[in-house]
Length: 258
Image (cartoon, rainbow, N blue to C red; front, side, top):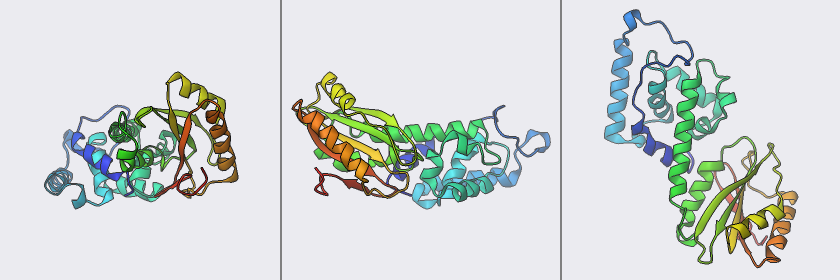
């Protein structure tokens, strides 16, 4: 798992098992509505292993099984967990996959999609809570974790702005735009205008590269310079521009591009 994996893992104990949903993909028929003993025993053993050893005691497909137990109460979900990992690549990419792509997987219904999206949103909220209203320099690692949790595995580019006060405390985190697989529109005047509205003294730009490679393009560099110029005119500092890749990130400040 990537940087964001530990956040999702913390939420797994919240996912118990529920009665089947009418919007779920059809399950295998079970005689008299009872859960077969081999499935029931497997689920009990898996939960016990998780509770005694934590996420480290389970491979990714078994973590996914724990989530799927709640969504699909009446059939063996191990094959589906393997199928999801094969199709999307890893645990994090399964959680961050779009509902449209998830629905293309045979056996995945709206209940499964909803549970995966709830877990993804919860992981992002937990990561975000560790950086909001805190000084960025003192919580830089937590900030990077949050950015990776929220953006690293998206299939299209997303552009966010982190607004800071005079003490470099993060006061707002806002999505400014979404784009295609290799482009997102950014409007420097809108970024500067919003900074004034928030009485922000500095900000950090963040966007992701769905390709996984955080190397900046010439368009990224040109856009950053335009935003910096718009902010300079207002006495607002651009601290950094982070590009989030699949497993690492690039800092314009560290690379001498700011």
